[in-house]
Image (tube, rainbow, N blue to C red):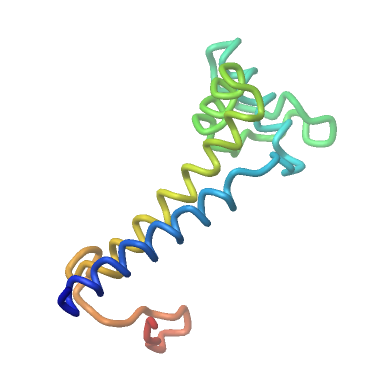
Length: 131
């Protein structure tokens, strides 16, 4: 077996292990304290077929302008209706796998995601280097 082939096999094995870890990290109990609000907002938008212009679900902010992006909350609500909290956990796991797969691909394939320079800009204008 050539050294190049062995290296490719090791990269694939390592990538599979990293993706499995990302999946396990994402597949967890939904524990965000705002999950109920997201689901309630999605339900409200779905049932009323309208995006509220003011906050209708909060006691403390009732009547304040609506500033939240609605479509993600509708997606979460519909997913919840189909598969309860387990479906939300699976979505989280698949999102983790997707992000890690993108980063692995970007790291292992030259030219993918290149922006034409080798660093990034820090807000104060100094240049930093990506590792």
